[in-house]
Structures are given as C-alpha cells and as structure tokens.
Length: 411
Ligand SMILES: Cc1cc2nc3c(=O)[nH]c(=O)nc-3n(C[C@H](O)[C@H](O)[C@H](O)COP(=O)(O)O)c2cc1C
Ligand code: SF4
Image 1 (cartoon, rainbow, N blue to C red):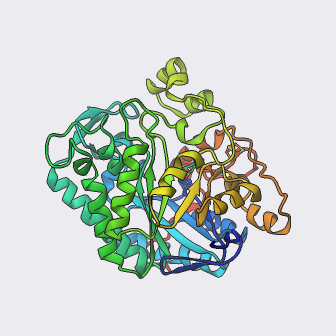
Image 2 (image 1 turned 30 degrees about the vertical axis):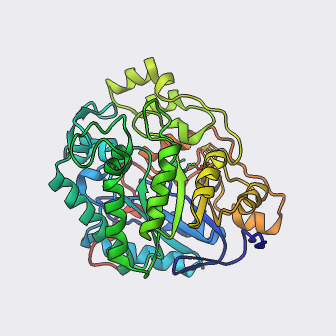
C-alpha cells in the first residue's frame, strides 16, 4: 500500500516542485488596472506566499478582451508581461510557486464593462448584464483556442510555474459542456463528444504551447447546480478524456454556475443584501426582489465537494486537487487519505493568508473564516475578507497611488 502523503511536505506537480501540497485557489482580486499588474496585486500574492502556501494562483486572466468579467482585468497581451514577471519574481522570493488562471468567461462576461459583445454557445440575453450574448462562430472558437495557447506560452515566458485553465462555472468552455446552455446543432453541440470539443481543443492547444515546461491544471465542473446542466456522470467521462489525451498534469474539480447559481460552489450564507447594494439599476431592484432565488443558500460543511470529487478520483489516475471547504489539517489529511495529491483553499486563506504557517506550527489550528460569503461582493472593488481591516483597493475611478499599473517600461 502506498504511504499517505504529508500535505505539508514537498511534492511534484507536473514539472513543478512545490514546497508543500497546499494551493491558494483563484479568488478574483480585481486589483489589476487597465489590464496591467499593480503593486496591490503583487502585495496580495506576496502575502499568501509568505503565509506558507505551496503555490498561489493569480485569478482569472482573460485570453481575449470579450472574455473578461470586468473592464480592468488582465488580458494576456505583451503589455502585461513586465508586470506579470515582477509578480512571479516577488512570489518566488518568498519560496512559493505561482500559477495563473487563464480562460474565457463566455456568457459570464459583463459586456457593459468590457464594451465588447459576450460570446456563448448559443445566442441569449445575459441575466448579469441584460445584454445580448452572441453565439460563437467556429472562427470565434478557433481564435479562442489559439488564444489559450498564446496565454499559456506567455505564462511560461513571464515565470509562472503552472497555468490553470478555467473549464468551470459556466464560463465559455463550461457553457459549451452544459446541455442547458449549449443548443448548437453543429460539431460543438449535441453529444457529449461535441459539447466537450472546445474544452479538449483548448487543453490540447495549451499542452502544445507549453510542453512540459510548466504544470497544467484544469479546473473542471462536476455539477453546474442547475436542472439540465452538466453533471457528474459526464464530468467523469470528460476527466477520462483529458487523462487519455495527456493534456493536464492535475485536475481540480469545481461546481456551480456564475451565471445561474453562483452559491452552489460556495455553500454557507447568501449575501443577497450586500450583492444588491453593489449592483446598478435595474439589476439592483431585481436582486432585491428575486435575489433569494439567484443567490440560494446551501449548507456549508468542510470538504463539501469531496463526495462528488471522490467519484472522479476513482475514475482517473491523474493527480487531483481537492477544493471546497478545505480549512484545517484534519480535512487536508482526509483529502490525502482519499487519494488527492493537493488541496486548494479560497476563503480560508482570504480570511487569513498565514493559515498554512499557523497549521504547520499547530496541527489543531482552526480557520477563522465563518462562510458568510461577503468576500464575494468585494470582487467588485478589490477582493478581501470583510472581517479583515484593509488594505482595500478602490474602484478605478478612485485609484490609489499603490494601484498604479506597471506599464510596459517597468520590470
Ligand atoms: C472572492 C472570491 C473570488 C473568486 N474568484 C474566482 C475566480 O476568479 N476563479 C475561480 O475559478 N474561482 C474563483 N472563486 C472560487 C474559489 O476558487 C473556490 O473555488 C471557492 O471559494 C471554494 O473554495 P473554498 O471553500 O476554499 O473557499 C472565488 C471565490 C471567492 C470567495
Ligand atoms: S468574508 Fe471572510 S469570513 Fe466571510 S466567507 Fe469571506 S473570507 Fe470567510
């Protein structure tokens, strides 16, 4: 029998060596400005690196302008490279590895902020922006696939140790997987093989672009959390296909739909009132009236995605990252015992970036996060735990000096 790994001992992820098996999950920072890295974004990840995590993940960087979820977000383009390089160097100086989440937000994009029409598998009207979502043409999809490859190449050039491709939350690749959102009749719609075509092509392009120079992770939905959505039985098959094609070094299983059921991923309190307060009209009134239906409450428990992820675990030999309610040494050890090689943590580390150091010193240390989920609302202004005072990042209109982007001359 294989020995159960120590979550706090060094480990290999693809070609990357991590000082331990803990990963800071992507939590969109909203700290880039004009699509460029800021000091605030660097400080955020340096805090996590100094707090003991094996690898931190720079959240969602878009592969194309229409694939952003807000107008300030980093797009993988040459102007962003010097800032990204400074960011990776700063994190490495603290002894941690750094991964970049790359993807296309598809129908989750807010075209009122990006000023470019959002793309989806089929034409629709976005609940988030109330604007039209355009059905992607096959030329659009070829461009998006290539853009993922180019993004991954840039991640290598700018010093990242890993790239994490977003195949979840009903972002573009995930919306194609969803039978509910994907009504196409061409080679991207209908059968699972067709609905998975975009995700598989993206992963091939990424592998082709980076070879084995950095690790490749895929963050894949197991369950959209909506009737008629993508579900576990199909996720198991897609995970097997990804394994067979050799395009990923580790699978990170996730759930939910940023478009239709965002709380399904988070569990815990639904911050309806706080969410309404940051929306513009008429969406604000809509959230107040039917917000309880959009932001539904699900009971929280530690390791809440384990039951589903265990089924993927049994179906593939690929290294896997367990995500969802990882908060203390006990649930980390459970993950290791269940055959997961890594754990990813979002809110527990937002609450307390030094939690891994604290757990190293005291295996009984408990997370201070109470799952009130109010941090979800801070993604509009600079993500943080609301229980931790500052440093906060103001909206673009009220930019602070420390948020000035590194332009192409720097770094
Ligand atoms: C404020 C915030 C922002 C998030 N942004 C992203 C994101 O950009 N990309 C992503 O894949 N997941 C994002 N997530 C989800 C987390 O990566 C993670 O999957 C989720 O919080 C569940 O893990 P946890 O129980 O450890 O918090 C975000 C979560 C929070 C709280
Ligand atoms: S706001 Fe803080 S305490 Fe609340 S869920 Fe987010 S990280 Fe946890």
